[in-house]
Length: 120
Image (cartoon, rainbow, N blue to C red; front, side):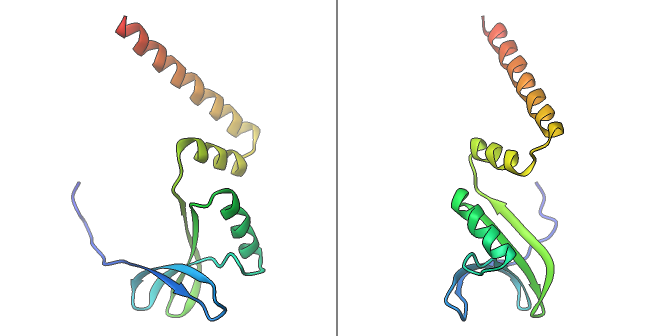
C-alpha cells in the first residue's frame, strides 16, 4: 500500500454545555465531526439512542466546518460478522435483500463442500 495523502487527526472526548459527553474527530482547526448527542430529544437523538441500545459500538458523527453543520454524517460500527448481519437485516428488510442473503449462503456452502472434497 502506498500513502497518497496524510492528515493529522485527533480523537477527543468533549463535554457539551448541557453536560453530554461525546466523541469528536478533529480534522483541522475549523473542521471536525461531532458525535450525535444520544440525550437530545430530537429525531436523530432518539434514533441514535435506540441504535446505541442495540448496537453499543455504533457511532454517528455530524460534520462541522467553520462552525456550521454541513448536513453530512460519518457513521460506523465495530461489529462481529453476526452483529453486522443483524444490523443489515434491520436496515434492508426487502424481498430483494433476502434473495441476496440466500444466494450468499449457497455460495459459502459450495466453497466449504469443495474444500472438504479436496481434503479427502
